[in-house]
Amino acid sequence: MPLPKAELHLHIEGTLEPELAFELAARNGVTLPYASVDELRAAQAFEDLQSFLDLYYACMAVLRTERDFEDLADAYLRRAAAQGVRHAEIFFDPQAHLARGVEMGTVVEGLGRALAASEENHGVSTRLIMCFLRDESAGSAMETLELARPYLDRITGIGLDSAEVGHPPVKFREVYEAAAALGLRRVAHAGEEGPASYVTEALDVLGVERVDHGLRCMEDPALVERLVRERIPLTLCPLSNVRLRAVDVLEDHPLPAMMEAGLLCTVNSDDPAYFGGYAGDNFDAVRDRLGLDEDRLRELARNSFLASFLEDDEERRAR
Ligand code: ES4
Ligand code: ZN
Image 1 (cartoon, rainbow, N blue to C red):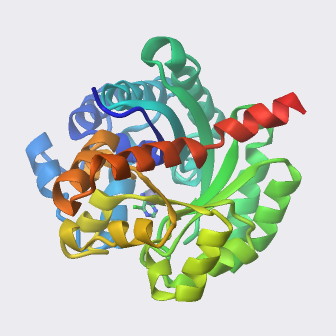
Image 2: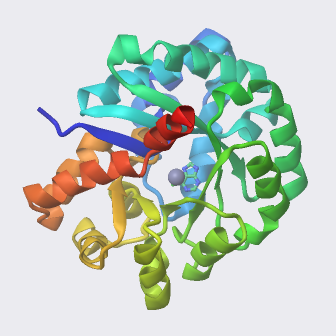
Image 3: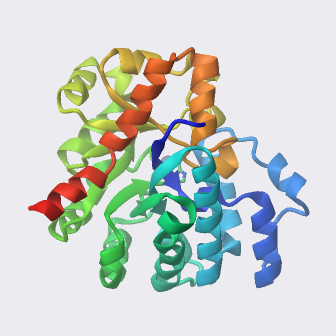
């Protein structure tokens, strides 16, 4: 039996397996720029974050209807459950769909249908986190937040993703302030390809309570000390880091050193259809190739629930 765990860093569009991509392409009359599943898989040899993002945005062209989003999320939840995931906090990228003429309501209602049935169908509780594309303008992010207003009962928080370098957290100060005023939880990708200073800025300027990736915090000892002291969770994605070349090989991943330093680390899958594995596969990889023992693996699983928005929600309800 796989360890029960929560998945806190998962882009739903990154769970689009090539087989489903071709199925949806046929259903919607969309042409993918690849002739076959094998050709699409062969295109998954990435140089860096941008080369991945190019393929990721190209493939999501097949997602058009509520049912597409429902099928996508249901397929993910089934796979996640089989790998021990009991709770999933799921990112989605509305701007990438709005740009293709797919409305906010189509995305949220479709994902929402799969999520609403997830506890009963898969034994997985869920939350939805809306991400802004940091390589789009702050104004576009603010408009997206406005478009989400009718759906905020189904959206727990906001995040920040896509191309990191050159798009520092401070660019989104006002959007994060507006989201906080609406009672939304705040996370952001920082320190994946960008420098440690982006992690500091995400904490100080955006008020994030959890950092997605945060890998490069290790370059700033004072920041590490602060993250430990303030118990800020990091949502690490080891297989993603290898595939996007943040680390050369998994054996070089700083996860063991990060845990040793007292950081509140979690292990997640990011874009499992593109990076070679779901949550359990990431746990297996760090066990087999980083030599983490059973105690450390249990600590990672426990951290995933501690770092989730579940417990706080319960506390908030009790108050
Ligand atoms: C992403 Cl791995 C990663 N980094 C930044 N943005 C993303 N969107 C989807 N996957
Ligand atoms: Zn990510």
